[in-house]
Image (cartoon, rainbow, N blue to C red; front, side, top):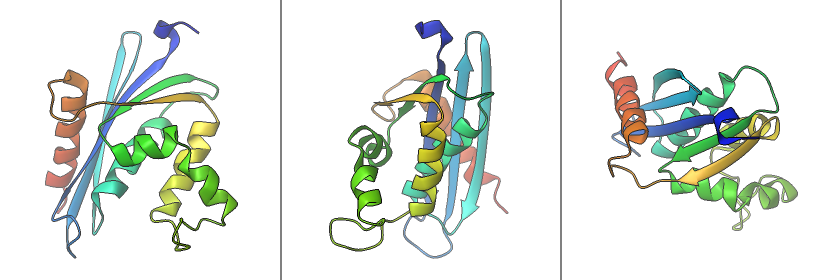
Length: 152
């Protein structure tokens, strides 16, 4: 599969008041395939930055037309990228979704949704440095902040 035949996704999450009750979070993603570009975003109340990072990727992958597609996901979230590239989920699944401390894995619902989408396509995760001038990553960040601002 050539690079031109692969879908590129830049995704980002943001949270205002992270870890405080009543906070607001947003997610944003830019999907591109050949000459077509699609932007998506949204927001949630009472969430966390990690949940928004995972949600951004999930929402983008859900918009793919078909299965078995080649996809490159770019994110500045070490939590998500490391979790996927280092396959943290293998141990979690083997341990009944308990982490190394034998406590329930945080954000299990989102990890399971993400895994289902990843397993139906050929997805490669790439870590990028946030706020470093990468145009599509900066745009995904803007969309995540837009998601926050649109919450009532």
